[in-house]
Length: 476
Image (tube, rainbow, N blue to C red):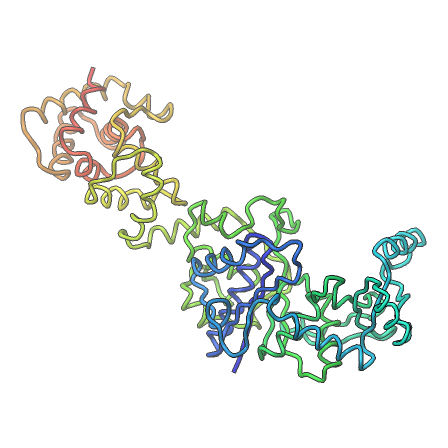
């Protein structure tokens, strides 16, 4: 059975790049009838943020990415939080030491930095100089018994290269001489990512690893650890970087990069999932809108690109507008309610509220925009929004139109929007007005905008009395 995993570090928010990694692992698992594991990699205790674990889980749930095993869904391969698995890592580190594949290092951070600066000054590749690599076991034991601080480093070959096949990039070659003897157990007793990830992926029976390109250069160390332990390595796939439109790397300095930021912006989860799925992957044709079920059906690692993927916020907004148009009106109403309430609108009339949402849904790209688009329905003081709108209601022909319309509405009561439109058309023939000069001035009087919903919808929402009140304001 295929088993994939998403293994974030709880150091803060869930990055959109992390969401893409989780999504691709989810899609592969679902496509092949396998399982997705969520594992929390919290071995960097200094950067751990306590609430981050729940935030990651919440954002995955919001996005519709349901994992099969992990925190809250314990199974036989748990626990799924690395800080609860420390003894397992210590055992494996000791196994490497005894086999001669790892060693104790007693170098201070100050010495390592000094050596690094000397290497840079001499235009050498900066890295650990392996000063402790050949310390005898007896000397190492004596240093430890004396209370010396130490880390454990794995031994890398001093020459040659690691050749491996990546499911996205094909054959990859990385020489060992550009790599350090990696620390695998830190001075605080916690493992580094490199040891923990290999041990956990093996013991959790992970068959496929899909992760970001930033881990590609570390992959030789991981393959080497699999070799040292005598384990079969999983298949690897490294996703392309996410880029800004200027081709720089998408990072915290780029602005909004957290999933929760896009949720707060009023992006629907299905729109964000659809958008990130197309960052580095495509179905092989021009389609752009996919449900998550369709993504599962279409997904394959072979269709993932090597080139960096540009994160185009305008395309995301367009995609979101398409999902808003298709969203069931009841659900969309619930989603925009908080924004309407924050604007101070009285939305107690649920029937009116749904009518408003139905007609504004084609005019919003994000949920917060609903407050501005719904303004006409909940604020009686409506002013023209721009110069075009001001001109439309100020023309002599418009004033005549408003005067006659108000008079006719006073004389002959109407009961719905269709009757109102018929009355407007009747008056238009009398005054020789049509098109822009007939309907737009009335729309401005009712909404403040020259373009917007059809008049029958406006009348049905506002009611005849409110329509007459707004028309009266402009008839003189």
